[in-house]
Structure formats: structure tokens, C-alpha cells
Amino acid sequence: MKRSYVHGYDRRARTRLQDQADAVADLLHSDTSYPAGSTVLEAGCGVGSQTVSLARNSPGARITSVDISAESLAEARSKVEAASLGNVQFRQGDVYALPFEPESFDHVFICFLLEHVPRPLDALAALKKLLRPGGSITVFEGDHGSTYFHPDSAAAHAAIRCQVELQRRGGGNANIGRELYPLLNQAGFQALRVSPRMVYVDSSRPRLVEGFTRKTFTAMIEGVREAAIKAGMIEPAAFDAGIRDLYRTAEDDGVFCYTFFKAFAVKEPMRARR
Amino acid sequence: MKRSYVHGYDRRARTRLQDQADAVADLLHSDTSYPAGSTVLEAGCGVGSQTVSLARNSPGARITSVDISAESLAEARSKVEAASLGNVQFRQGDVYALPFEPESFDHVFICFLLEHVPRPLDALAALKKLLRPGGSITVFEGDHGSTYFHPDSAAAHAAIRCQVELQRRGGGNANIGRELYPLLNQAGFQALRVSPRMVYVDSSRPRLVEGFTRKTFTAMIEGVREAAIKAGMIEPAAFDAGIRDLYRTAEDDGVFCYTFFKAFAVKEPMRARR
Image (cartoon, rainbow over all chains, first blue to last red; front, side):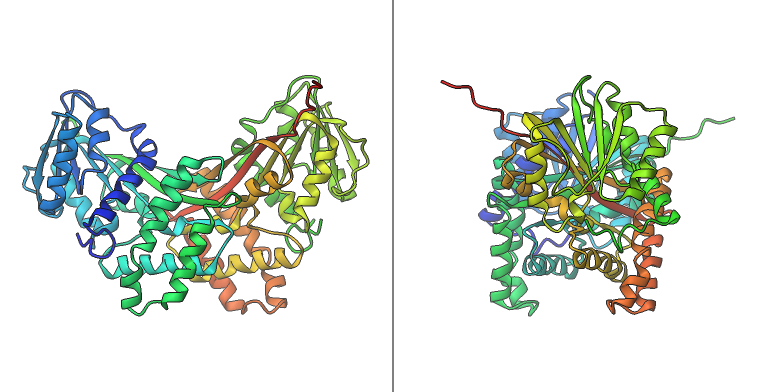
């Protein structure tokens, strides 16, 4: 799971991830909860941006949150402790080879994980093995190609493309949201249902202007400035013009649109013997 | 209202418009209805694609549907008669100078109108004059810039851009959906609320694959082939490759996304004298 350019582990990146978690929490968690007594694997929990909401919405479920980074796990753990949640345990591990027995979870939950893994189908296959027959998987991913705005700006789109290309070079896919249906289908999940969750922002929604357009999306693109310039993808002035135009969409007559995708599917239950 | 390239008045275009009306009817009409006794102006009714749903959902309202084209009006009238609806009357007129007294309607309804008019703000101002103080306006428009799909394809985007550019040269704006908030705001409407209506299509939704991806969107882009080639915008082979790639998104592992925008706003009521 390469997160090099995209999600730095510095304080600024952490703040951004938390702003994003707040702004999109409703979109993601409003219809995600697990029954008491069920076991839930959160794969790729990162710094725990979703873990607290997940654990709060399913107080009786036993959640196991894993990530490849010990440092991220430490931060996730302190978030969960600060929220006085007792139903989460943490384990370090790689999504392709997690340290669990097959069929040991009732449910799998992943958020902003597939966008970073070089082999999303293999990751889904590995997670499917850990799921009991009849268990569910919930997947939440963004799609940077779903971004459009007013005023439109070629410079802003060019800056966004830098982020997409850097993520691609890191083995990821920033436009993976639209692919959840074919991916989960190909991985053999059943009863698959994908629902887009569009974030529409105009100045009648100031919390989203600040929390999403400015502090989440534009800050994320701004965060790849040095890497994009160093990689020779863009001239500094062109990149900066793109960022200015993204902030421009947060003004009173601006509009900003972005879509996340949520997928829900089930692992085929064992067939009854005849 | 130039509709030259974009909406031909031949049988095929009429069929397409009806397919589109069926596929998007729920998105548009599910929360549009007017009280008994109220007067509603439908400006730019075209061939009546929305008029029947509008009249059915508001059986007690008195609807006046206008269009600049006598031929379109005749077709709209026969649709309404075939549906045995008695609450619609038709008038011919130009949206900038409609033959009605100021403040003579309780509500205004427009759908796929602003995308075709060269001066959308002037059109909104003209419609606002016809609205009584405290009356409402409902606007529904698409946005071709909201289109993305899987598999992604530069050729498909190039073909779509031909349609957008032809519409622009005709005085319209195929990407106007995202601008509804600033436009209605600038026109001085109050209590403005824009809600996006995304059409998400994967193969678990065969009615949308057929009715929207294939018969509505791709057929519409395909319909500008000759005009785009004649205008020197694109080579025939490149255009055809784009259309093939759009149809490709309608296959089993394909995904297609498009977003309409619905706006609702109110004309400021007269202030009480103090």
C-alpha cells in the first residue's frame, strides 16, 4: 500500500484527513451499522479517520482494524481511546496477507483502501477469504475523475491530473470509485449494489465549502505540488494557477462537485446439500 | 432558442427524447407537484416530454405550456390529448417575450430550456416578471461535463466535446447544470436550493443501461456525427471510435455516470407595509 505522495503522515495531512472524515462521515456511515455480536474487519484503517464512526454506529459489534503502518495504527488507537470506545482492537498487517484464519469475520469494511493498492482484485480476493459465507463487504472509495466545478478551469483540471498521475505511479488509482461494480463482480461477490454519494457544494452550504472544497479536496491537490513539479509533470506557475482556480470555486458564485461510491455485497453462502 | 444541431425534429430525435423522458422522469417529477387551483407556466415545453408527467402529478393545477416551435407544440398537444389530461393549455411564444401579463403565474417550471438559450439570465429575468411575488420556479438541466464512465476513453470524451461545442456555437451551454445556483442567485430568486440528481448505471440496472446510457446519452452524441464532421471538429474515424467506446460502457462490466441538476427557488414576496 503505497501512500507516499498522496497521504503524507505529517500533521497537516492528518488534519486534512480528519476534515475529510467529518465532511463525508454522513455519506458513508449513515447507512453502515453491524449487529451486536458480529465481527467486523476494517482493512486499511489508516489513522482511524473512519474507525470512531464505525465503532460508534455498531456499539455491540467487535471491530478489528488493521493497517500496514504502525505509526498510523498508534494514532488510530489514540483516537478510539479518546472516544472511550471499547469495541475496537488493532492489528498490523498487509491487506494481501492478513494474520487471520479464513472465514473468521462476519463483515469486512474498507474505505479509501482500494485506491492505493496496486492489485485491487487480489486485495478483494484476500479479504473475501477472511469473510464467512453469507458475510458482507462494504467498500467506500472516491473518484477524482468525478470532479467538476464552476467556474470551469483547464488549469484546475491539469493540477488534479497531477495528483491522479502521481497516485498511478505509486501503484494506485484515484479514479477507482466508478470501478467498484466490475471489481466486486469480478471478485465473485453476490447481491452487489453500488450507490454513488455525490458531494454537491454551493455557497448555501458553507460547512461543505470550508470542510470539503477548501480543506479536503483543494488541500489534497495542493499537497502534491512539490512532487508534481519534481516529477516534471507541470510548471510551478501552471500548478499554482490551478490551485487558485480550485479555491475560486469556493467563492460565493462557485460550485464544486465530487462523487464517492459505496458498494455493498455478500459472499455467497454455502449451498444447502440436497 | 436555437435547437438546430442538438434536437432535430425528426422521428428518431422524438423517440430519443421520449426515452430520455421515461428514464429521468422519476428524478425530475418525483418531488414536483403543484396545489389544486394554482397556475403553472411550463416554458419551453418542446414536444411535451415533461408535460404529461407534470400535468398528471398536479391534476388540480392549471398548466400553461409554451414553446417557440408550432410543430413541437402540436406534438405536445397530441401527447396531452392521448393521455386524456384536461388541465393543460398551449401557447406559442419566445421565452424572452411571452404573451402574458406580469405576475400572472403562481409557479414556473422549466426543463432543458436554459441549456439552449443564449442569455439564460435574461430568460430567468423574463420568467421572474411573470411570476407572482412568493411564487416558485423549478429548473431542471443536465450537465454533459458531469459525464464519466468505465472503461474510460479519451475518444469518447472527444465525441462528447463535439456535442458541447456544437451546442455552444448554437448559443447554448451543455454544461449549464452546475451553474444553476449562481444563475438563479444572480437573477434575484430567494430560498434557492439546488439538488443534483445523478444517474448511475451499471449492469445491475438494465433499464437504465438501455434507456439512458444507450438510447438517451449515446444516441444524443451519435446524433451530432454529421454536424461535427462537417464543422471540421473531428475526423469520422475518431468520432466513431468515441461512439463505440460509449456503447462499450453499456456492456456487463461497464459503468456510466451523468448528473442532472434541479433547482427550486422563490420570487421574493411583497414586503408588508410598516
